[in-house]
Figure 1 (cartoon, rainbow, N blue to C red):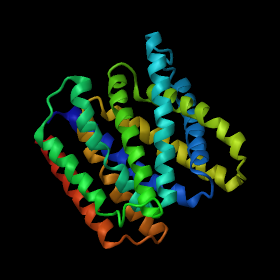
Figure 2 (cartoon, rainbow, N blue to C red):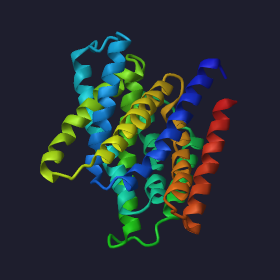
Figure 3 (cartoon, rainbow, N blue to C red):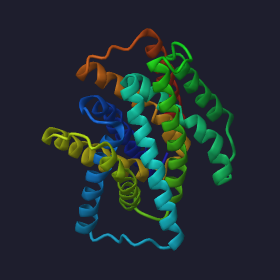
Length: 285
């Protein structure tokens, strides 16, 4: 494997670690999911704008059509992050992150048709095994059950993230990751801003500080690292590595929130982790 491939994998792994801790914010901040995401993308956008100005990096896009694609990606990002936060608030950090980790299954189905690549049997097997791991955590399929609602929100988050990842792969060859992140998150902030006027949440100074941390470190930096990794890492591979996000989420929730995962959650996480190690080793060969 070339040195650039190693850098791409490292970039994706670091981003996934930061993403894994994000689930804590859904529990630590007593605000609706969409407001948390609004604060996240707002502070992230401001940070990225300042970063691009300091670096004197070109922000203008090459083609008019790219503006429409970026706006569409930003709308999808808003839905993805809002549904992810809602999944955790509806259930637990473990359930929300594990349900989201099924997104490689949807990428596996979509990517070959979008980029005209061959569908590998091993990718299908990995995705199915990960999906089986998520099914282990669902006690019963009824909307009255909070865990089931969490899984459904998580699956919506997974589907939208699969679409977003494929769009980001399209952008990664033409624009720097920071530029892509900036446009997507500014769009997400504009889309979600009306919710601030509708819900009128009581936001404290502490909430602002926490959301600022979430926006700068765990969003602007992490999102840019993840998109940058697409330069040398396939979306399916990045998706499989993202399975570690649930592991990081479960461990961080155990340490900081005292959420102890049950046997079913541990079993599902073990399946996902096994697939992650297998996929990463296969790429490294």
